[in-house]
Image (cartoon, rainbow, N blue to C red; front, side, top):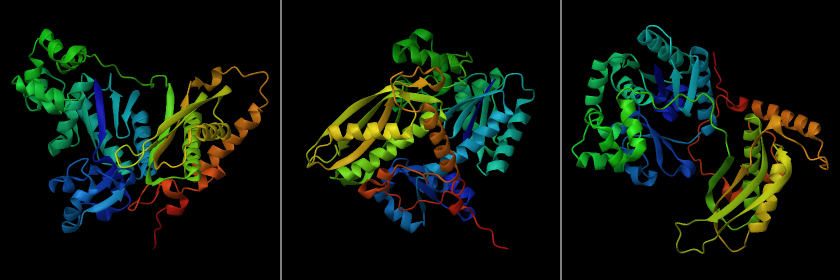
Length: 417
């Protein structure tokens, strides 16, 4: 059996853990640069605030109903996610981290799944403060269906188990076709036009009909809904080909200094990710671009790739290469909206063959990076390349950002007796 554990309204729940006054009131979390709504509490959903709506379009609703608004705090969300995932790893044989707030669980051989699931849900909520829901079934797609019931109906106590044919059919009859995992808006309209409105009606089709309407991917989904395992649990992420870090700027910029600061920040972040995953990069790609939505402005975008003599995870080398690439492609006179850095040709650190003629002291570099990571683990971004300190216009707009309660000692909660 496979479980799918999902953190309920995750970003909002993270904010509520450290601010109980937010419980029971409408809360929304905004995207980068405070642009659009990307997370909503149930109270905000009741006010008909749609996912993805630009925040300027709902200012009246926010003011009228005193909606609490937060900028995305990915440092906090990432740390809270890691806490949830560590608890899952301790409780189950294998997990597949599907997203920041979802994981598939291998529950093979675990007796009394309903009791196990309800206890797991209670333990995670008690340990982290994050409310979660768990769906359990014989396939990933059915586990997704079960999860929606666990989240919607309180009688399940956070855990819904589909472990019989009767339960499977009943669940599929109550699941609209557009709510099935893997069926988007376009496909759901196509199926509804053919009078297929529920997951159960879809499951009754023959394979030939499914292939004709949805290709092989659709047939795999159909088989999963009928209880046949087609999507295996992947404990280890597939080999990565690249790591990218990029952001749109809070304000457009014309200056090379601003782009250098942002590029260095992205490059340092990529290097940190490489070391965390025991990888090294054979090359670095740097890119810049203007705002393609501003048709009244001149447009320009370009990229450059800088290769290394041998793969590296050294922040100083990666930053230097990214800045070299930026220098090659920068053109004055344009209003830049975004830049980014991508590390390419990734190789496991333990399989690297170094260049005999390279002057770099590998042992010294490794020791320096280990010290750098140790310092930044205690206080994020306390040691950064000097060039990245000048954030300028390129900093993200975060007018409603909460504190880094779990990762920065300066933001730790104070308890006064």
